[in-house]
Image (cartoon, rainbow, N blue to C red; front, side, top):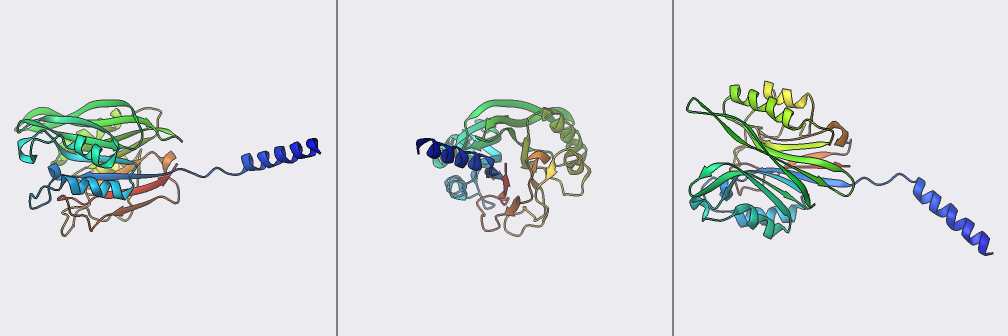
Length: 254
């Protein structure tokens, strides 16, 4: 009797192991937070934090983040957002600004294993300078990947240089998620350059700027093709107007 029971237990275990494993859903967001203020310059940082927490996002790429700047109340914005959401965070500055620093941020539900602070070319008053490119390595429990965010230039000549630099920064074996404000429409050469290697998630091309009456698609989420499944989805949160941009969300299955 004991041998028969063990036999059936073994058969049951083998049947469970043979079933296809359920994929892990990952919710990603890209959000230009306009130094934690809406289009009317009303400070909305805590509302932004509450929205991100309620959204259930696992990974968030943030642009136009202040750290200890006078204009936003001398607040470390990434620290505040991390406290509100309960997420891990990273910050990397473009440059010193208004008594503090101005740059990029990442929020992650998963511990950040490694932060990579890279630079991309920026032209200012005819001078060659640089802006931040922020990437982190993390493990979702199902997969190790690189999550990154960027805010690229207003002029196309610089954007083309930056797009090439971004792709070189992301060269490697790990799957990649790239978020950001690209200041470029979908049919531009710089967006096409990036989409040659990374899949363009938001096929609907819903506009993300300005928040009140959006007419331009300039915020994007790109992913390595190996991460993109048929049941992935993307949505622009048109009701959320805590910035001058709308947040862009994507859900994918690992």
